[in-house]
Image (tube, rainbow, N blue to C red; front, side, top):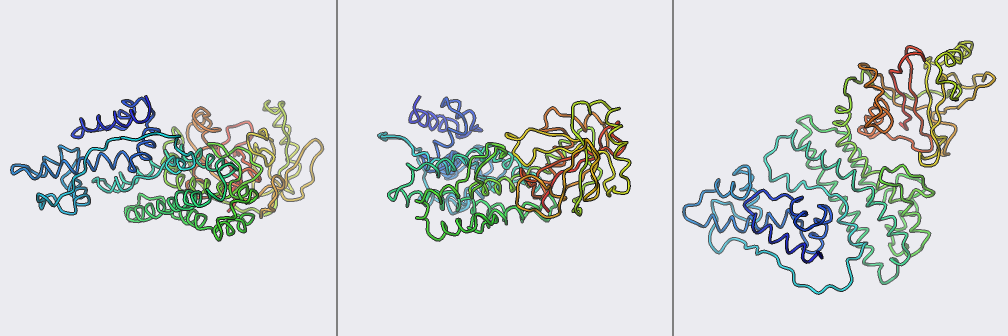
Length: 488
């Protein structure tokens, strides 16, 4: 079935069910396509979202119903799937410019069913479609519903979770488009500027403004994770051309001042960067401006939905304490090897480290220190080292290796690592705390990281990334604390 038939079938279905609860998934099924693809095509062809179309048709018919002498507002509201007379009245007034009680013949808008009568030549240009492939928020639709502040926030958090699942791939497609030389010529420059600067950047700024206003109204009720405002500030700065990455500041300023510089391949490479994959963890040779926007978008989403996820992830255990620490220079001394799976072998290792008591640090615990040598997870394999954090320059026993830590980032990937981190302690069911199924690593890792993401804390991945399980009661017991690298 081609897209003309799909949309025609969908419009016919809507007309037959305007007084029913219309499900987007069912509409897409009627058209033999996915929900996301159906909504994208409908928006591109009709110039409005499917929700806007249904609402316009209902408001048009509702006015005709209200003109009947025996009609009641509440009955018409219920007929057209509004939960309350108040929400119906708001929607009706926005559409017609008058309240339902003051409706008069000849003074209402009429919105007729749409029909399609076109000739197809070619197809949709991929670059234009990119704009609508982002999962934009639907705050306007929520405003017409009567919801509690908690319900409003849950709706926004739910949108953020879905956007997090969809937007990363769209940013990667945007990177591909910018790097496609065939898309960049003098003839296409004006159109491309509209797509990138107005279609993408300006639309994100508009969405951010709506989110900021909507969330600000909810702050007094205590339901909002206020870290989201810091994430919005950062995102808005980047969208305005105020690049935080010093290596990108000059090229971003050039493009914002003169978009024609995008005709230069080397400029586009720095703007586009490389694709980082759906999770944002793929290795890249160039981290560009689009990559920064991708991270900023994720930061807003994480701030909205991560706190609730953290609560749901604590099944059978809980976080007792959580804090951020900046240590002075220090050194980790330890060893890796398959033989350390044996508890007795581990005990002998720590007996040797006990001889260095004069060098012990404030972190005098047995730990399993983990990292990828400053590389992305898809390049550098995981390494786990049993040992302890000691004072800087501690002598290293024979057969051991060491990793140094410094307080400030030296701008180089890999060693030395940063001595800044989040520190979480846990209690509860030990098996639940170390559960791996359903988690990226295990429960303690995920919860610690997700608290950081929800609070807008920078994780120095991949260059200075490391984590550590902390065995407060010794290496022969379960670990009950976690360290996660941060850039504070």
